[in-house]
Each structure stands twice: as C-alpha cells, then as structure tokens.
Amino acid sequence: MEFRHLGRSGLMVSEISYGNWITHGSQVEEDAALACVRAALDSGITTFDTADVYAGTRAESVLGRALKGERREGLEIFTKVYWPTGPGRNDRGLSRKHIMESIDGSLRRLQTDHVDLYQAHRYDYSTPLEETMEAFADVVRSGKAHYIGVSEWKASQLREAHALARELRIPLISNQPQYSMLWRVIETEVIPASEELGIGQIVWSPMAQGVLSGKYLPGQPPPAGSRATDEKSGANFIARFLNDDVLTRVQRLKPLAEQAGLTMAQLAVAWVLQNPNVASAIVGASRPEQVHDNVTAAGVKLDADLLKAIDEIVEPVTERDPAKTESPAQRP
Figure: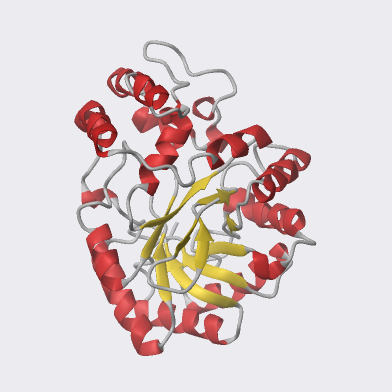
C-alpha cells in the first residue's frame, strides 16, 4: 500500500480507501462485510469511509464492529452528515442541531470517541454556512473529529467554506466527489480551487459504479445480481452509463489494461490516482477477493501514452460539465 497526504494537511491516508456505502448493512450479510474489512486491513488499507445515512445508520454499526480491537491510532475513520437519518424535520441537513446530534450517534455506532474526518455529505442551502462551520468548529474543538471535509461541493462553496474555516482556525482539508474516466466534472473548477486552497480529493465510484470493470456488455442485459439490477444498491447511479456507446468504448479499454498488466478494475482505480490532487480512491466490495484485486492499483504509474490512448477512447462519452456537481436545492 502507498500513502498520500490528504490535502495540505499532515494527515496520511492509504491510496485505496475502503468504503461501505452500498454493501454493509444492506447488500451483503454481516459475516461477508466483516470478511471484506479484514481483507482490507490485511491488504494494508488504513482508511475507512462511511456515513450516517448508509443503510439507515446500519453501515456505521457494522464498520464499528468490524474494526473493534484494531489499534485506533493506526486507522483513519471517516464519516459524514447531511442526508436524513430519521423522520423529523431536523433529522437532516447541516444545522447545528443535526450536526451535534449526528456526530454523537456516529461515534456511538462506530464504537470510537472520535473520527479522523467529519464530512458534510452535501451542501445545505437551508442553513447559513456560518452556522454549519461554527458547529463543525465545536466538533473539532471537542475532540470528536480531527479534521473537516465536504462531499460534492462546488468550487465557489469550497472557497467560502475554506475562508470561514481559516477564521475559525479549523482544518478543512478534503472533498469527496464522484470521479472516474467517465465522470470528470471536477476537473474544470473543483480541482483548481482545491489545489489553491490545499484541499485534497477522496474520490468515490472510480469504477463508474462497476461499468469500468467491463462486466456490462453492449446489447446485453446486465448480469444477474449486479448493481444495475438492484434498486437498493445504486441502480439509479449506474443507469447513466448503461448505454451501448459507453459500454462499447469501455470494452475497447480491455487491450490497454492487458498491456499495462492490470485488470479493468485496477486500471480504473489507478487512473484516478494519477491525478495529484486525488489523495485516495474509495472502493467497496461484497467479497474479499474484490478488495485484494483493487488494492493492486496502489502505486501503479500509467505512462503518458497509455493515458492519451484512454482519453481518445472515452472522450466522446465523458461527462465534464461542472454544473453536474450539485446538492439538493432543498433538504431531502
């Protein structure tokens, strides 16, 4: 495993992070989830990402049980707040009330007294940003989180939040966006702003919801049991990539992966790690062997000719519109 600084901070994270968005507490049984976390630890992964909303808070509980007994100082545990975790009007968003209640719930489920990174899961247009950042400052000063991050925030929002964080003297060090060969909306505005501000990216869906693994074939129905056939496991996210033009171009990447001595999945994960502003790529798994396969992408260097060949294949179907970085106009 290789490690990188997260933004311009002193925090080191593993190039591959283990995330449990879809799997833990919903898609796979707990024994399988625990085996995947064990595989991640055995593979050298030290960075684990979750959120209070995943599987209706169950994912945090599963991760807490899976990591119990591990040396806490040897791990980087990340979680998030924003999406609904209950039926009440204040069980969502980035109000002071929800943040202060949510951090305590997350710590209880994760069985730890602090998280290394506490992230705003989206931007909350219903709460003054000053209120949100002041609540985050109190979370940091209470010792319940070491650092603050955000997820899917626009460049302008990052700039405004970073300015407030500096005033409050708290470390806003990361953004967690979707990023892959097929989804490059952060490259135009978010990454330049992040480089200027000292913010690093922890990217999700580097395999474009599994499409870049090559298992989805043009002109054929999705494989049985795959993410595309399960409404609970992100089928709505993957739908945007499931057209024959995209899938045909993805198949053309196979010879390039073979040339590099990588699987398609490894190529996809290695590709996002070529961006110097990316600190870590989040991968999930339903089987331990998937973890071991993905970890091989750490430390891989793709040469310029290979990167150019990839661009030439996927460019016509690549999404680059920075407006695609968005948060709900109203709290869900």
